[in-house]
Length: 561
Ligand SMILES: *Cc1c(COP(=O)(O)O)cnc(C)c1O
Image 1 (cartoon, helix red, strand yellow):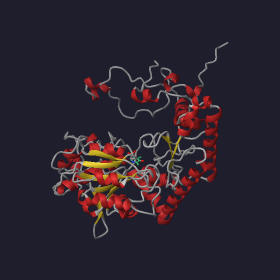
Image 2 (cartoon, helix red, strand yellow):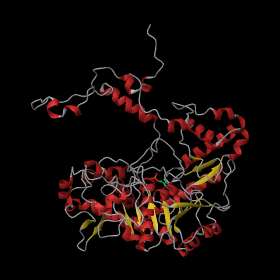
Image 3 (cartoon, rainbow, N blue to C red):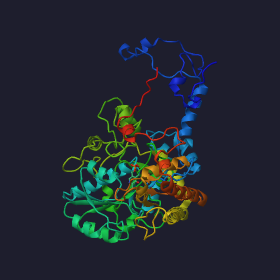
Image 4 (cartoon, rainbow, N blue to C red):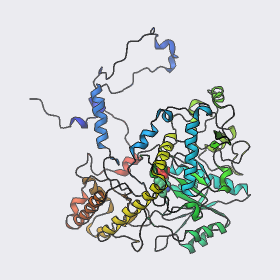
């Protein structure tokens, strides 16, 4: 009898399913005379060997991808309380709207007259985001949160330099998101870290001691990454402004404040938002995203160009676009000018994005030569400031075309379908859900700042379980057996054995209770049966992995024949 293979069919790699000569498609008969490829392509550019693609039937391709999708975990599969990431349910109607042919099938090189609907959407979104954040002007170009941070910091840099001031330091609290000091470094600043006080807030005395003539900006998240609202934000703003610095608001997670308070009213000068967290774009695993940046009037001259404007007649236009428009594109294709690689400095989402202006061998129709030279570089900006788009103080372009347009459509649909009242409810429910969870879990896990209510998320510590030999990592792994995505762990860095939970507004009480009960059960298991936790998970395709090894020495190809 034939031996039964232990590998389940759905666990086979697509390469293992491959058999020479199998074909999964059929093409119509060729209706033009066949020409040998040697006559069409120079011989030195022809491959000598075939590609080692798997050769399978259509049904095997379908099973391959279906099996992969079942191993994935997303918000549409289950609860995903990943703190600081806002993994909320994204209404499907916003996906439908982004797929309308009028949005999905346009091209950025079309003449402005034929893009009026898209430009109107961008213009209105700029105005809505300015309203939500309390800012005067908004750019939609940045492709991610970190990219927005970098864009904002480059504007801050240009602002100080325009006043003849050399300010080299950016202050961040010790609870800050890792992208903050990283963006500051990439923008050419030194970072100064200020400690939090016992209540998890910025320590005002430490801040007073840190500011000075060299302070360019303070970067702050409010509510901060501990989920706490910085109640002394007005004093914080006064201290920084009095020293001549500006305030940068990391608004990656705006889920707690929409319709309730605005960074602009708190004294901030620059804000970025993560549309892919707060405003209805599914994310995780790399993108695409959008990190629009809003600024107060005094920084508006430095905004990236091009930007969408409306003239007196109500017609929308792209300011900063080179006058020759689409014709300019045609005439510059293939000139081999150095490409922009826009946004490469700040953003994962935009690196090597297909269809970037650079990839057609041109700097595109919308980039002035001066700005291409100055922006794409990941190294600190040149001394003496950035040459902007010709004739303006703009820091230039930071992203190919006008940003990730599909994400902007989703965000606009989200904002419009909820309206101001709906957005406020989003934030109220996000905060309510987080406080409910925090209160129910408090008897079982240490809550470091439990004397105050939290905002959209909260942190706990697993340090009470260390006495049983159990670490936060073990709790997170055990959660997988119950079908939950674990919360964020070991961040922020200033809480030991940190567990950071963000339930979001889109979950029912039953879902919250199910997760809470599970966390309580795991705390009990830690006490009574720690071995069980140390070897978890048991129900996943793979169990404990060498995560450092997987990140540092990834094996990305298949060695099977
Ligand atoms: C997610 C996040 C960022 C970075 O956003 P990306 O889009 O991943 O670059 C920055 N700050 C905070 C507080 C965040 O939560």
